[in-house]
Length: 318
Image: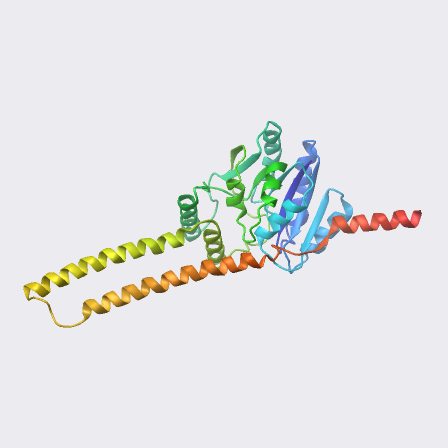
């Protein structure tokens, strides 16, 4: 059986269509499946629609968070809760083409443990967004040795891979990188990013920056390396200024004033403050990790509700 994990946040316009489209594709190909919607604390009718679908169709299951914990939490909740021999993570807006799922399943049946769908292009994104994404992935690739070029969350994973991800202890997660970091036999297939079926993107500039900072600091030490190189550059600059000042002093051409001193003090203070800020940011991440709070809190699981209803009916009939 294949579990299709679908994170959802304020996706009331997409839930029914997504369930129908993916369900029809899998049924036509004779695949046993479950559609696992994870409601990430939506404020619209997303959960109401998921509950309604789960009540009508035993292949649909819903998990509701107590509040918004973010897409990473929703993905890992789905991985922890799914029952399939393999799982596919896909976006609710169908920008990831569900038509590829049967092909991914066939590749899995041939022994591939991770089938990663990569973008052939970034679709209709703004120039700023494309540049931001390109810069982010370049930093991740060079500092972590994990190739995230054209990567997406759309991928199929064998049960062994799912168990390996579930065993990772960290609280701050980056699914796209961790699913590559764990290894296993992997093959890639390309896809074109489709336009959203309905609704609008939940990402904005502030969320993108926060997402990038969280993932860079949780997966690499790149900011620490920047501070080190700034220190080296400042040392070279200070040595050049120092030599120049000594030459002028001994040659009698030194000018009065403290311009050089001011420059050195400002530069050194700037580097120190930036360094303290980076160290403080890493310390805040360490603090979040050692508190060991859960990545998410599940308030409702339709599977548990169905089980209780079945047990109640059996008890009544008995």
